[in-house]
Image (cartoon, rainbow, N blue to C red; front, side, top):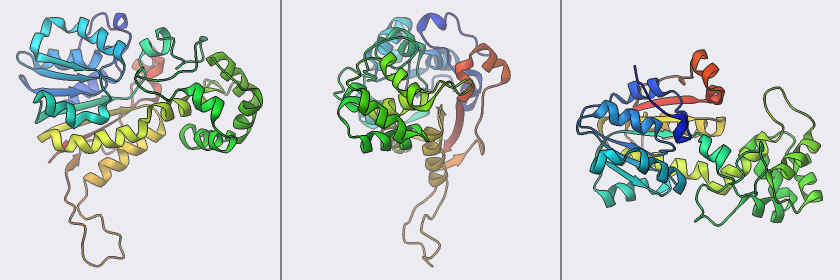
Length: 313
């Protein structure tokens, strides 16, 4: 059993920890990449299982996450490389550090408690903060820019596509009427006025905040880029693990895994293959792996987690 100490102190409770570490099939002295190091929960378990001699490359766009990870893993010396960049540059980062091929790559796409509760960057509507939502201060676009300058049609399109908000037009119209909006609580109240009260466990502003965060950080585009690059980095038999938290992420991962586990991708109307595509992955999990009821009870934020696993061939 994987044991972690003081995980809460590092701002993030790792989700599906035992399941993901088991799926990675960690080898002693192996080389692994954690593309979303967060508070270092998965990274710590990888290093523990890979000792002695295991190496880890940890990446995070959030400089605060890297700061926490550097403190946590300082005793590992040169066996740990930590990089404050977006994982969209995954292959470039690995080339710069001579970190290839690798035995496994993991993406945990969930927000950390550090980001949600302590950053003051507007990821949560549970406390008042500026409408920022950037993972990295080096990014230019903020949630306030979108909310206060985009047209009603553009806002509705974002909320519908990235938040799957059925009442996107109502929300967009109310935002236009009430702007400028500067803080999270201002926006949450506007959304609640537009769509009504709470829907069970889900706050009415949840989908709006999700949509804005995805657009500000180009999350789906970055995920697509990084997944494609991972194929070039994994050695034969290397495992690729992705833990996602909403349907758009999971759909992106599912489609990528399905495509790369197939041979010919030509449409049925083409009698002879002209694409020349060869399978690069073998599906290890045919269906998503979800947290146990015990984990959900201990960490309610894990309830929407979905894990998929594939192996490089």
